[in-house]
Length: 295
Image 1 (cartoon, rainbow, N blue to C red):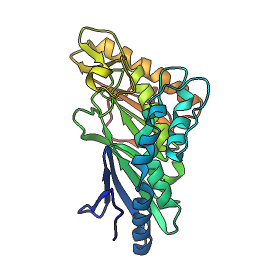
Image 2 (cartoon, rainbow, N blue to C red; image 1 turned 90 degrees about the horizontal axis):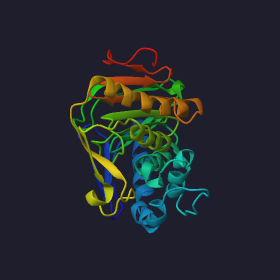
Image 3 (cartoon, one colour; image 1 turned 180 degrees about the vertical axis):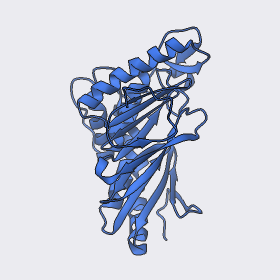
């Protein structure tokens, strides 16, 4: 396959496609006829060519908090980022909150525009865009702590569930968080929506306690869109009642987003405790500590 310049691409031992450029790290799985899979891989690479440069041109706007008017953005991924973050603009949010999910969506669209694809998933650093043809299903790992990164359970997603995006956010992740969640996993109709919502819910999982250490985002990354806003850098041992209180604060935000149709479900994790919001037919496994009543 002739790869486009500017992208680092390879095929993993299990047949998945790897596309990397700068902070973008896509792992793409595609199922279908051999010819359809090859064509879809080529389409994904072509779709990603030049994307990073295009987004960098609009970076000042993408790092600006959303306010009363939708920003004028040129690239479709940039516009999609603003669109997915728009429901959360009453609080502080910039379109950068869902950049990973929006990029995953962009690559997935190139794949699903082609015939013969029965299943596809684009994983951009843990934020996943999904396509499942009728009767297809996929198991997705659920992470209890982004500091560890290993799944401790699985969710079975079926085509009829209407889930096209899975995203996870939390303070140990690769992006800064204002909250203290170890991991918040959100399921939504599209990946950018899941990514933005996971950010907002993870920010809401919060509590003031001496065990929570924070620093201004700018001191950790001079280019952070969060500026001088304090972000969490360490969460030591917390009293169990405070852990539950923090989770309940996040769950209230998740429930509001669920009621507005922004998300389909959310799982919130902190210090070994879990809350699950949503009642769609997704089957979590190995989650016996999830609080009853919020499944």
